[in-house]
Image 1 (cartoon, rainbow, N blue to C red):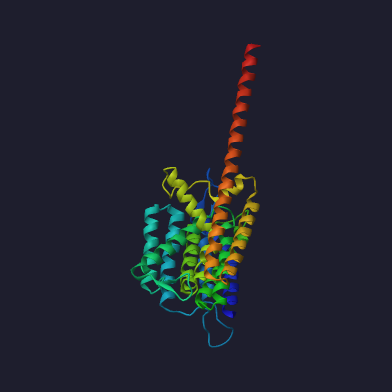
Image 2 (image 1 turned 45 degrees about the horizontal axis):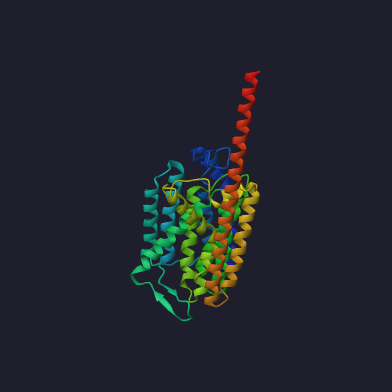
Length: 374
C-alpha cells in the first residue's frame, strides 16, 4: 500500500508542476486545438497536456518505494515493464505528432499495433481466461498474441473517443484506475499494476486542475492514447491474470462508458456510410449537452455514472461467476435502453426546433408579403 500511495502523490505533484510547462510548450510550438463546428471550446487551447501526464506518470512509478536506504523504485522492473516503457513511449510520440500534424488514421492504427506487438514480444500476453465454472480455464493458444493486441489497441482508442469535454477523459481515467487498483490489491493480483494505475490516477488528478472546465490545456491524442494504452496494459497484468471469471469482467464494467461510446460511434458512422475515423458531434457527452445540461453538469453526471459502475464492478468481483455475468449483461442492457431513450428525446427536440424554425420563417414571409401589398 505504501508504494501505491507514494506513486500517486509523486505523480500528482509532478503533474501539477509540469502542466504549466506543457501549456507554454504548446504555445511555443503552436500545437493548438483550434475551435471548429464540432468542438465545444471557443478559443485555441494547447494540446500537449499529455506530455505532462506522461512524465508525471514516469516520476510516479520511479518514485522511491520507501524513504530511506537502500533506494528502490516503487515499480519492480521485469521484461514486461521494460516492454511497456518502450511501447508507451512510441504511443506518446505518435500522439504528439498527431496533435501537431494530424496523421492519417491508417498510419496511427499501424503504429499502435506495432507498439502492442512490441509489448507482446516482451512477454505480456493474455495467456488464458477463466471459465464461468470455478476452476475451469480456457487457454487461448495461438490467439494469445492477437487477443492481447486487439484488447490493448481497442482500450488505447476508447479514452480518446470520450476526450470531448473538459476534464472528462482525465476524470473517467482516475475512476477506472482506482477501481482496478482496489481489485488488484484486494485479490493480490499485481503490485506493479497497482503502482502503474496509482501513478496514472495521480497524473490525471494533478492535470485536472488545468483541464477541468474552463480548460487551460487539453491532453491531446498524446495524453488520451497513453492513458488508454496504460489501462489496457494494466488490466492484462492484473485482472486477466486472475483465476476468477468475475474479476475478468471488472475491466469491462469499469470502462463501460468509453467502451459503449466507441462501439456506438463506430456503428453510427457505419450505418450512415461514414468512415469510422471521421469525427462527429454525437458522442455520449455531446448528447448530454444537447439535452440542455451545462458543460460541468454533463461531466459531473458522467463521473457519477462511472463511479456507480465502479462500485458495481467491485461488488461483482465478490459474487459467483454466474451472478457476475448476469449482472454485467443487465447493466449493459440498461445502458443500451438509456442511450436509445436519450436518442429519442434528442430527436424529438430537434424535430420541434426544426418545426418552430419553419413556422417562424413562414411568418416572416407572410409579414413581408403583407408589407408589399400595403
